[in-house]
Length: 456
Picture 1 (spheres, one colour):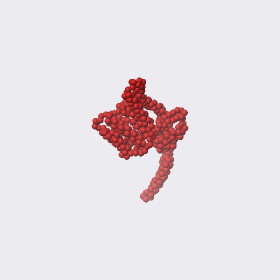
Picture 2 (spheres, rainbow, N blue to C red):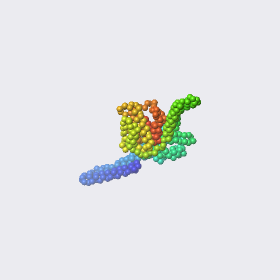
Picture 3 (spheres, rainbow, N blue to C red):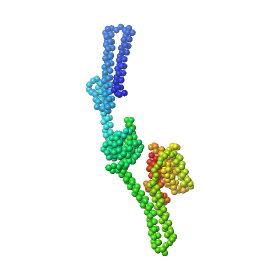
Picture 4 (cartoon, rainbow, N blue to C red):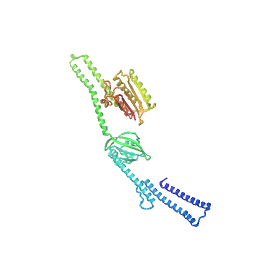
C-alpha cells in the first residue's frame, strides 16, 4: 500500500470514529437526562443544547486540522519516494500547532537534503578515487548491463563507450565470453590482441547483492610487462643452467678427443689402455648428456590433465605404500590427517601421483641425508578443504631446512643440490599443478619443511 492510500485509509477511519463517538455521546446525554428525572430551567436547557451543538463544530475543526497535517506528512512521504528534498511549508502563519508541524516537516526535509548532498559528494569522491587507479573496475548485472566502470577499464579495453558486456566482442570475442560467464572467486588471465597492441589482462571476479540485484565486480590489470619480465628472467635462469650442464659435458669430451687425436698421430706411441679409458670417459659423458636431454624432454612434454574424482584418503595410502616400497630400510614414520575423512579431489590422479611421488622421495632423501641415527624422523601429510573451498594437501618433513639462498631456485628447471639429481622433479611437479589449475608452494619455519599443493 502506498503512502497516499495509507493516509486516505487512516483519515477515513478517524472520521468514522469521531462521528460514531459524537453520536454515542449525544445519545448518552439524552438518555441520562430522560432517565434521571432532572428538572432543568429553560436557560440551562438551552445552554446544554448549545454546548451539544458546539461539540460537532469543535470536533469537525480538529478533524480539518488533522487532515491538513496528514496531507503535509503525505507530501513529505511522496517527496521521499520521488527523491525530492525541495519541499517547504510556511512557518510564519497559521495556528501555533500548524507552525510547529510545518517547522518539524521542514526540518525533516532539510535533514534529507543534507543526507542526499553528502551521499552525492561521497559517491563523487569514490568515483574520483576509482578513476585515479590503474586497475580497471567494471560492475555488471545478470543481464550483462554495465552499471559502472572507471577510466582505467576504458583505457585497458581501448574503448570510449561501454554500456553492455556484448560490446566487448568488438574488442575480443574470447574476452566477452569469459567475462560473461565468470563467477565470484574466478581469477582469469586473458590475452587481448588488436590493432593497438597486445595485452594480458588479469581479471579478479567478486559478487555483491545490492537492492535485490546480483552484481559482479570485475577488477582488470594489465600484466603484460610483468609476464615479459618473468619470462625473460626464466629464460635467463634456464640458459645459465643449460650452459652449465652442456659445458660440463662438452668440455671433457673436447679435451679427451684432442688427447686421443694426438695419440693416433704416431702409431708407435698408441697406448691401448689409455685409448680405451679415454673412449669410456667420452661414452659416459655423452650418456650423461643424453640423460640431461631426456630430462629436458620430460619437462617440455607434460601431457594434458584428464581430471576425475577420487578419494584423498585412499590416494594418500597408495602413495605412502609406494614410498615405503621404494625405501624399505627407512625408519621414517608417515603421519596422515585427512579432514574430512571422505575428502574428494577432482584432478588427474596419474599426474598428481607423479607430484606426490617426487615430493615424498625428496622428503625421504632430505631426512636421511642429515643424520641416519636421528630418533624422530617423520613425514606428515595433511589434507583439508580451506575457507575458499579449495582442497589443500601439505607434505611436511622434519629434515634439514632448505637454505634461504636455495629456496628461490628450487623450482628452476635443472637446478639441483644433489650430484645424482636431475633438477627437474620440482619443476615438473609445479608445472603439473599449474596445468591442473592449482599451485605448488614451499613453506619453511626453520624446523620443518612443507610443500603445499592447492587445488583451486
